[in-house]
Every structure is written in structure tokens, then in C-alpha cells.
Length: 168
Image (cartoon, rainbow, N blue to C red; front, side, top):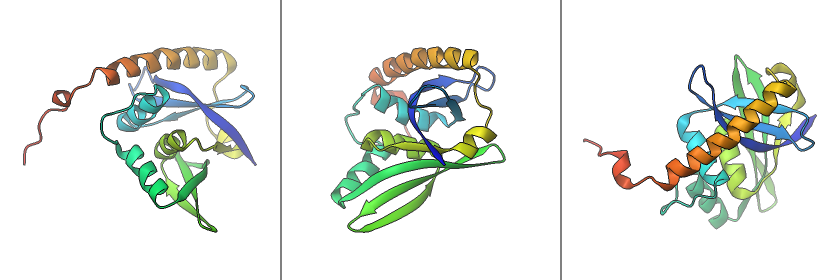
């Protein structure tokens, strides 16, 4: 059984300084934190903050390619948790076929946000994960809102010079 969830925000783990995307069920009863990489957090934050980069970033490129191929993301599922690692599947519809593609949850979520596709989480994943209790959940969601604003400000003020130069 799967639970439909939405991205409630992004926050930082104060202990590991690692970004966390917080998914929350539609009824607002369950929150699921998923630790992700900084680049994926940036991709999610830009979409949440409605920041449009001058050139397509990786997840935007993937969305554009799917559109050109007339493929549609029908849903994503966070469907497993093994050794503290979450697993996800992206479901694509092309003509009359459905394809399932293994993905990291962060990439699947970034793509789902760009394609307005539903996000589902297996109930077992929610049960097996360290679900956030109500008090901590509210604290994490408040932190997520603050972090989202910080990410928006950082991303809006980025310039090409901020990335430095690559040496060959």
C-alpha cells in the first residue's frame, strides 16, 4: 500500500550538515525525512522556490527531453529502504507502454516537482524509517521553511563566477 505525499520542504541535519527533504502525507499526519546530497537539494530547492536558471539544469533537461519524446512521468514511488538507503522508481508513460526506472529518491522527487507528478511512499518504508514524532515534525517543518527561504536567496544571487573555473 502506498501513501501519497508532497514535499514539505528542505532542511539541514544539524549534526551531519546534510540536506534533508521532508515529505508529508496529504492529510498532514506523517512526515518522512530523507537525507540527500547538496546538488539534489539545490535542484529541489530551485523548483520549490520557483527559481528559473538561465539555462536548463540536469533535472530540467531531463524534463525537456521527456516532453520532446512525448513521454510523461505518471508518478514516482519511494518504495524501499535498505541499510539506511532509500530507493525510488520513476514511472513513465510513452505511447501505450509504462516504463519503470530505478532512481535515487532525490532525483525522482526533483523530476516529480518539475512534471507535477504525484509522489507515493510505500507504507512499509514509512514504518521502517525513523518517522518524525509530532513535536519534532513541526520543528523540522519550520526549519524547512527557513531553509527554503535561505536556498532561494542563495540561488537567486548566484553568478557564473561563483562556480570557479575547471582546470583540464
